[in-house]
Amino acid sequence: MATHQTGKGLAVVTGASTGIGLELAKCAAQDGYDLIIAADEERINLVATNLKEFGTTVDAVEADLSTLEGVDRLVERITASGRSVDLLMANAGRGLAKGFLDQSFGEARKVIDTNVTGTIYLIHEIGNQMRSRGEGRILLTGSIAGFIPGSYQAVYNGTKAFINSFSFALREELKESGVTVSCLMPGATETEFFKRADLMDTAIGQAKKDDAADVARIGYDALMDGKGDVVSGWKNKLQAAVANVTPASVLAHQHSKMAEPGSGTK
Image (cartoon, rainbow, N blue to C red; front, side, top):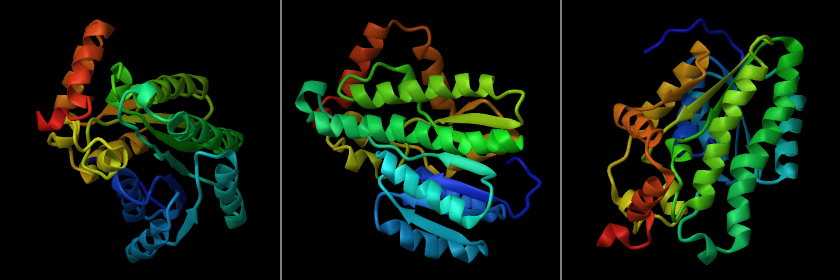
């Protein structure tokens, strides 16, 4: 585990009500950072209460980060705190199962608006403030799914391909600014994601998954060390490496066997 010089700065974590986001918030709280955490559900308020046990101040924002208005609400709360953001962990995300044409377009758009539009809007707002100060750290939660054409998860995997690519590009643009950009690329992780995305009857939904706390710690250490990207776990590293040399058509076929509805019960 990496060791870091810590002080009472401010960390903002989105998608912090469960899973990787919650564990990232715990990492920051344990490191002495005060928190502003956000999610689109009431549970975020209970999470804030629990995180205060680490001895830091925690402010919860219940907002739909798939909307510009929801992101504005979070930014307004940050501004009202009168503090600069030292760490921004843009983790909010949403998945969606089934074939693309079998999904409602409204659901598909919600995935895009959460994973892409809301995420980069927040980074644009806070990133500009960081660049003006000449310091700050940004962590995006991408995925090894971004390396794989995701049959039966086409929209989700497409959004993660965007985030993976965007993080590398933004890091290059900001390399002389004092602001670091890191991308955490986990594989399947034990969170509520699969249930919420209606993937529990699939092979990937039934497969063994990584521990969210372990994944978050890897991402948090990468953020604090200023690393550009990190894939969590050796199996995921191997999968990402193989994906880079495998034809897209083969990857799409392989993914369909894991994500096709009912594949977990065959």
